[in-house]
Length: 113
Length: 115
Image 1 (cartoon, chains in turn green, orange):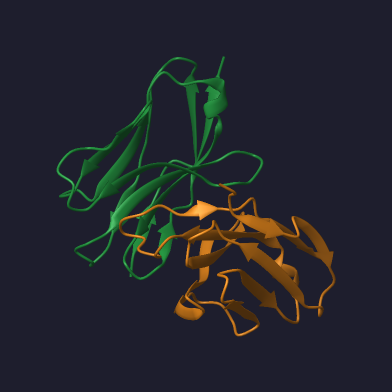
Image 2 (image 1 turned 45 degrees about the vertical axis):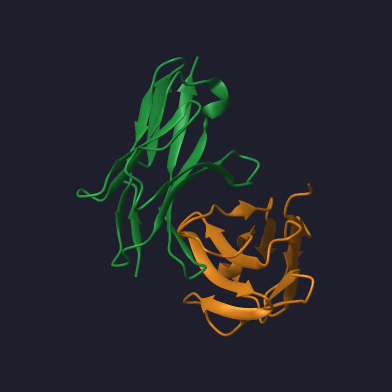
C-alpha cells in the first residue's frame, strides 16, 4: 500500500517570494512516480510536476521544482516567485503501475499581495 | 485536443436514489479512474478501468460501481444514495494507466449533493 503525508494544512507566502510545500511518502514498490497537482477553487486538478523513482536529478517545470530526497522519502514542491494566481490547494500524489494513485490531504496555499 | 469531460457538473439527489455520472477521456487514452473528494476524507480512489476491464478498486461499498465502454468512455453509478455520498467526483484519464510514469488528466468533476 502507498501513503502520502502532507503535514501543512495551510501555508501563507508573500507575492514574489518562494515557498516549499512538504510531502513525504511510503511505498514498498521499487518503481513509482511522485506528482504534484494544483486544485484551484474551480475544482479541476491541474498537473504540475512529476518525479520518477529512478530519476537522479530533481524535476523542474518553470517556477516549480521538486526536491526529491529518496532516502528520506520526501518530495517537496518548491514554487519560486509566487504569484497571486498560485493561491490554491496543492496535492502530492504517488502512483505505481497498477493504475491507482494515492493522494495526500493537500495544502492550501494563500499568496498575499 | 479536448480534455476530460464529465457530466453532469452539478446534481442534487435525495437519499435512497441512484445516480450515474459520465466521463469522456482524452482521445487515445484507454485508462479511466474515478476519485471521490470530500472535505473530511480528501481524495479517495474508487476504481480504474483499462480497455473495458476494471483493474483496480478502492475500499468503497458495492453501492459504487462503474463500467467502461469500447470507446473508453466510462460511467460510475452509486445506488441507494446516503448523505455521506455528497462529494466532488473526479474522473481522470491517462494513455496507459501506468501511474508510475505518467500524470493523470482530470475533468472538472461532478458535484453531487445528497439531501
